[in-house]
Length: 157
Image 1: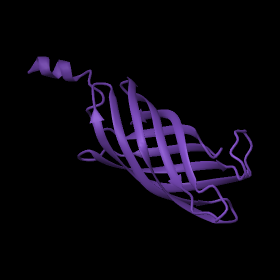
Image 2 (image 1 turned 45 degrees about the vertical axis):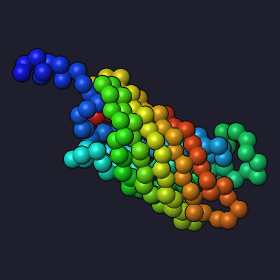
Image 3 (image 1 turned 90 degrees about the horizontal axis):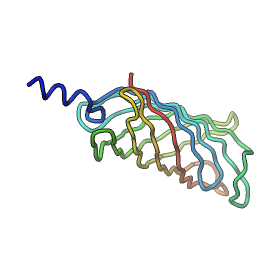
Image 4 (image 1 turned 30 degrees about the horizontal axis):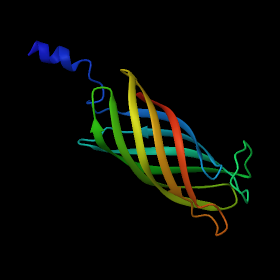
């Protein structure tokens, strides 16, 4: 019995945990994302979380990369993550949810979904890579589809 406890001590990915996450990313439509999230540990494989996200939205007529943006949206939302696979120090989640916010002149909302890969680099620190797509309900001539790649960290609480 003691050998089983000693063996299980090094397994981080198998244990449910509450986490605080920070991440940043960029979409193919030249928008930049900054996200602060809190995720609670669910009873099974489904977890609930909240997020605060800043979107530096680019309204350029052509897709090109620059560090400027015309509009900054701030939004808050709810999301669910579902654990697809776990190994000793790695897990893969499917993440889906919705958020709403504003740029102080108009309201936006968007559903989002994607996958995230979590690498446990220390018992309380995880490196997160995620692919996400969201659909901005903004205006007709905007780049509504925003597929993005994100990188960040989660810290177990």
